[in-house]
Image (cartoon, rainbow, N blue to C red):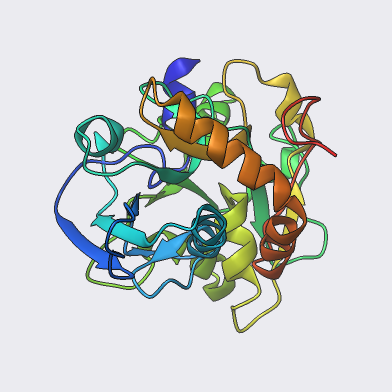
Length: 279
């Protein structure tokens, strides 16, 4: 189960250090910056122009903390937590599953899930829907084995293996490479995609044809391959002071954060549990 949690949606959770570039607002003398590790080419989450929803949430929190914001840009691959956060090159990773090991997570500020994306108003709701076996399917993958994201596991368990894989880590020669799976539905390359909700919601409304998202009804019955995740920020293990400060600011700004998520069409699932940011 830990493996499927780590291989959640590629960029944010499974990253390999491939290069670093610093950016953001210039440091203010005497005030340490809030150093944030983020991907420069991964909308709707982050990019180096500050256009992603995680960019906007981080900027909001930095203002609350009265710290200048400094980005350390990383192409998202495996080893991100170990090579960047634990190594002390940054203080915070935004938009990371709170179940990821190797860091200290904040309280979650939203919860989302994988979704079906199709061209008809009523896409399938379950991996057990017989219609899936008659469709050209696309699924997000990390490696070449097509079995390293929870949806890939669930399709394989049901013997549905004739699917097209779309890498979550993307091609850095194009903008926002992971969005290719949504474009493939719009272009008719595939009939149905199973994609991480925040990315799917953002890019679905930017296609030239209407696309429809539906939650996966049986996602709560998949303990070995969970499809829903609490998302927070990650700090270094032992940095309880920064975690507490971020938790406080995230809670204070939950209305503003909810507005940002709505603006970016992030599908928010199940209420967050008591004591973890719920009103």
